Structures are given as structure tokens and as C-alpha cells.
Image (cartoon, rainbow over all chains, first blue to last red; front, side, top):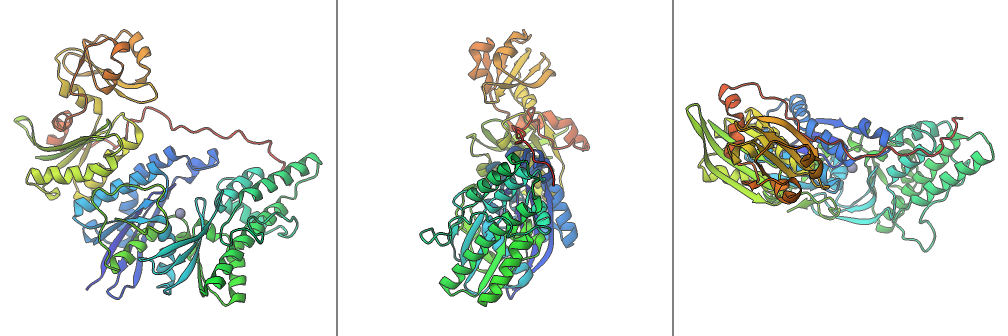
Amino acid sequence: MTDRLILGIESSCDETGVGIVRLGPDGALELLSDEVASSVEQHARFGGVVPEVASRAHLEAMVPTMRRSLEIAGVELSDVDAIAVTAGPGLAGALLVGVSAAKAYAAALGKPLYGVNHLAGHVAADTLEHGPLPDRCLALLVSGGHSQLLLVEGLAHKITELGSTVDDAAGEAYDKVARLLDLPYPGGPPIDRLAKTGNGCAIAFPRGLTGPRDNRYDFSFSGLKTAVARWVERSEKAGDELPLADVAASFQEAVADVLTMKAVRACKDLGIDTLVVAGGVAANSRISGLAAERCAEAGIDLRVPRPKLCGDNGAMIAAIGAHLVAAGAEPSPVDLSTTPGLPVGTIQVR
Amino acid sequence: MLVLAIDTATPAVTAGVVDLTADSPPRLLAQRVTLDAKAHGELLTPHLTDALAEAGRTFADVDAIVVGAGPGPFTGLRVGLVTAAALGQALGKPVYPVPTPDAVALAAATGEPLLVATDARRREVYWAVYDAAGVRVDGPGVDRPADLAERGLDVRAAVGEGAVLYADVLGFPVVGPHHPTPVALVAVAAADVLAGAEPGPLTPLYLRRPDAVEPVGRKRVTRA
Ligand SMILES: [Zn+2]
């Protein structure tokens, strides 16, 4: 068996991504290109992703992003051996652009098509940087759209959700708090920057779902967001000057504390020694920093892909596609459709 | 020339394989058309593959692609455009966008002034007006049927699902077919395709802005 080229297309939210991965005969993955066109600036004034705006941007960006990705990889479309595309979860109209394009590319080239799970892609992204995962590992996925703890027993085989957010995703909480603090959208990077100059212990914001009777692996960030809003309101009413940096740092500390505490707890409960932290919010300095501290203490090997691979991109979709191809998975059917609510356990839509 | 015809601007998932020569009208070799407003994404590419197979051809034989650029409900409309764009890129062949109502008008070919009105949902229609020669003289636009009727359009008949839905309000006799045919789509672009003209941009005719409201900001706090 020779090398195979796997192309990945991502369009589940506000990033149009096309990535190309070389799958070696031994199963090794080599990242050849990872081009992303983002419509994030078009959503900024709305304070969140507007589905129709995102879908329009995907249509405009699809072919140019494909062209750039092929150029950077130094390959032709006809060299591609298989195409993977995000079939879900995500925004229906946005997913539809990527899936429609992928089906057309696959049909025109006569190559197999794999409709894959976006969340599995986030975990697979790490294998592009750090090589194969152990047979069992835990993944903490944190982004604007998801906050989940996953048990991964073979990327192409079995992913089980241990817990997830019962309300807002971690990234959503960042966006909402950023608005409260008059910081730009998306809220993650500006809060992270501001927090570095503040004291994370200044304000004791609540840690959601950490009581003795609460679910051990689920998250909740809605109460935290409300607590920040109340604190800001009270401080305004009192006429105090708002200690922005301390609020940001204390909020960020509460998020990082709960996420990493539960991830490490799950590792210990299940006797797992590898934790992957992925998704757009994984790039947050305090979350990855605290995860490193706690994993070191607990003797857990922590893996965090570089920031470019943490956000939504096509390379991660090519990566999960490559794992499926390597495992001998059958392609998805020609009438593949999008599944906006695709559960994480469904790694491939068949 | 072998031309693929694609349209997803109406509830019809339209895929056709058309033979185009300089000295005769476009000729249909095979088509797959399904009426299902929710299945564009699922069915379009399989329809194209099946139509090509029935015509005894493959994607490699395709010389050009013609695609309806709308107006039409956005989600479905994009399926046709992105499919056409990806096929064009993969095959290295030109993709010609045509206004969908032009193809609907051509397929109806009443020889009299005609209104094309398709369903724009939200109690509105996408519309365009054609003269007796089939030349578009007004539109495309998106309006409420009653507002359109008030304009006193100089037409003898109306075609399209919007024309059926709002026949009472519009007051014109309804003719068919209500969806663009592959042959009509190719006919609209025939001169450009045959001349190998540089295609226009693959821009959908949305005619509406995205629904989105800027949040009313809470009273912003002062920066520390
Ligand atoms: Zn994501």
C-alpha cells in the first residue's frame, strides 16, 4: 500500500476550511496544507454567529480556499484519494455548503466520500501534531459551540460522551462576558489578554455543577455568566470603578478550574493517562496552563494541539477521514445528508 | 458540446445532461428531477451522476456547466451553486450562471408577455416580467403578491409556483411548467457556452439581506 492523500472540508460554523493530509502505509499522518477562510469579522457586530451570513460566506470561500489548499500542498485535485467532509454537528445551512461541495468533488473525481463528525475531527487534529493516540484516552473539547468530555477508544472506532455542558458552551460564556465588559467578539482572546493583568482570586465566582450531588462530568456556565453580570451591575450601582482585569481573570479562573478539574477527575476515575484538550477555547492560556499543572500533578500526559489546529479547520476533518480510511471504513452513501445534531458517538455518517 | 444543467432555486432538484450544438436547439439527453424542497443537498449530485449514466457519458465528457443563480430560498439555492462551482473546478470546465426565472420563462414560451413568480416564502414571491419575445423587461424582484398586482403588470399569463399559490391575488391565467427545465437553462446560456465566453461570477441572486439584528447593548460599563 502506498501513500494516500485525504482531503478534508469543514463548514459547520463560521470557518471554511480545506486541509490535505498524507496517510502513509504505516498509518502515519503528514499535514500538507490547512487553509481556513473565516467570516468571524462579519459576525462581530451581531455578537454571535449569524447562520445566514456564515452560509453565504462558505459559498463564496469554498472554491478559493480549495485552490489555496491544493497550491500549498503542491498537489492536484486528481491526486486526491478520498474526501472527508463535516456532516455534523453544526449549523444546517453552513454544513450543507460543505457537504454539497464535497459530494460534487467526490463525484467529479470518482473518489470515495466520508461524511464525518466534527467533534471527532477536533480530537483527530492532535494526531497531526503529536502522532497516534493511545488505545484509550480522554478528550476535553471546548469551543464556542461545544464543551464536552469524551472517552476516545480508537478515533475511527469508539467515542463516548462522558459529559457535556447543560447550558452554554464555554466559548459562549466568554462571548457573553466579553459583551458585559465591553470587549470585542469573539470574547476568548480579549478576556485572556486582560486576565493576564488581573487577579484570578479577586472575586469568587461560582463553579457550576461541582457540588457533591452534581453530575461528575457535566458542565454549566450559565450561572457563572449571570454571576458576572450581577457583580458588574452591583459595582456600577455602587459607583465603583470596575476592576476589569480582575473580573476577567476571576471569570477565566472559574471556567478553567471547572473544566480541568472535571477532565482530570474523569482520567482518574477511568484510569486513563492521556488527556487531549482541543477546540477553539483550548488555545486559552489559563485553560491550557491549569490543565498542564493539574495533569503534571496527577501523572497524566497532556496533549494540546497548536492554536491553528484547535480552531475549526479542514485539516482536522482530513485527519479523522484518514483514520477512517486507514481503518478500512466503507465510504458514506452518495445521498449523504447533513446532520446538524449529529451525536459524538457517530464518528462517520454511513 | 455536453452541458450539465443544474437548478435548485425552486422546490425542484433539477439535473440534466444536454447536447448543445451551434446549428440546432439544445437537446435533452437525460434528466433527473425530484420535487422536494428539502432534498437538494441529498439528491443533486446523485441526480447528476444518474443522468450522466443514462446518457452514457461521464463527468470527464462534460464541456460546460449551466446553473440557475436564483432568486430562490437561500439554503437550497446555494446547493446548486456550490455543486456547480466544485464540479467546474474539479473538471476544469466553465460554469455559467443564469437567472432562474429566465429559464422558467423560456420553458413556458407562451409568445406573449409573461410574469414569472416563484415562491419566496414569507408570503412573498420572487418575480420577473418578460415581453412577447421572451426578453426580461422588469425584475427580478421580491415582493408581496398584492403589491405586485397593484403595479398593473402588462402581461397575459403567469408561471411558477408563486403564480399558482397567489393566482387569486395576481389575477393572471396560470401556465406551466413551473420549474426551469435543463434544456431551457442551457438555452439561456447557449450563446456564451458556444462562444466559450468568460463566465460571470457565480453570485446567487439573494435579493434579501440576511435576517440578523444587532443586539441592543446593555448600558456599557466604563473602561477601567
Ligand atoms: Zn468546532
